[in-house]
Length: 319
Image 1: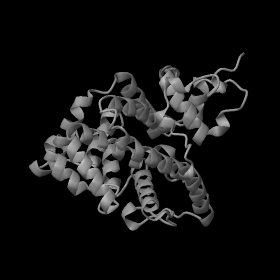
Image 2: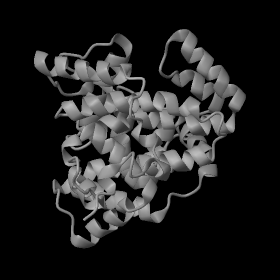
Image 3: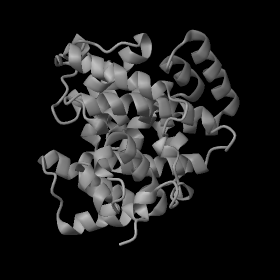
Image 4: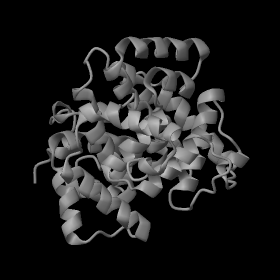
């Protein structure tokens, strides 16, 4: 990663340098987003849900943006519906109160990344990124929401960020990416790191980790993300970032491979998380319902045109 690439041996360094090069065309992250995310992650580390007034105002200013407001509205409809009461006016303050600091950091990161990466990727090809990304966000979001040891934020980041890493692959080598998609489909795989490294000299885990750092999630968290994604058995995950990432990766991967929810996490996760029969049943019910819904609410696809008195009446209530 950026802070430690120079300390690696030559072979290890090449993949990280290639990841940085693939991300270069997408430019630097806008300071108002990276600063907000750093603030929010800092308060997560402190175990505090109460932000100083200046920090709160900074987040609320972002939430006033019409595209971000649309994303929050539709996401809240899915994950925090109790925050939206029919016939009652809702505004950015309602959205601010509906999520923890870390959850805000993740949602804002996705708001920024999906637009930034999407604008610089061929419009006809963007669906190759969107389709697996939206499915991963649905699965990860539901598992994270339902499993206390994971949480909504880590559930969304765990796999979704890795699919966003497809955008740099696609932009750099369109033909190579089409071959990669066909390979994944033929082999029924979510990813193939060896194929990625042969084609792009890096892999989606490395790209996702650098994206995390660029967005304002710090280096230690990116290291925990990598350890979980690579199922590093020799790594002991820390409580703040490592354990939630490991639990999320184990649960999401097993569901995507088998259609089932693990009753306990595997040994590589570093810690054991046991899920009751009731919890597993509730998760499966919600996943089956969401994934079979052809009109599923893809909250990350929403923009300013998704806000109208007809579609989002709670944003237009008089008085």
